[in-house]
Amino acid sequence: MISLSNSEDGNVSTTAATERLARAMTVSSGEFSLILACCNCVTTQQQILNSLTEFSPANIQDILLTPELETLYTTLVTTIGDTQPEALMVRGLESVVAINQLIISTNLIRNEFRKKFRFPLVLWVNDEILRKLVWLAPDFKDWAASTIRFDVPSNQLIESEQQAISA
Picture 1: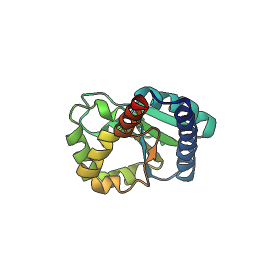
Picture 2: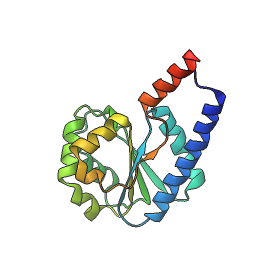
Picture 3: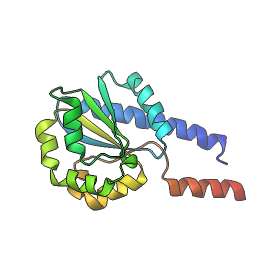
């Protein structure tokens, strides 16, 4: 079990990360930027999105990807059409069956993102997807500033739980 103080620290950390995400979207308003938001819990992602409106006056469009997706860029272009939202959140990468192919194709056409999108693009990733981006799409991933983390990596969480049990 994780102690109450750790839970409180987690809430403070999540609030700070949410404010950081809102600030990153505001700073990038009107131009393309890639923002990686790392959260290993889908429920937490939704809670953060719900509370984000408190920190950001931006009109944020949210897209939830489906497992059969083959390309990220084409899906986003098709979904938003000619509109340019103030920010675009993309969730569900962890559910995509052919994720390796999707990430590789995203890297290959990365320049199209900058040409077409004039808004911050927030990709919600978990630790596994983040590792895949580093290995399979290093050029695309390099466009992102440091990753905004909303929870501890799963291996650290397991270590914390094991330490709490043995204490």
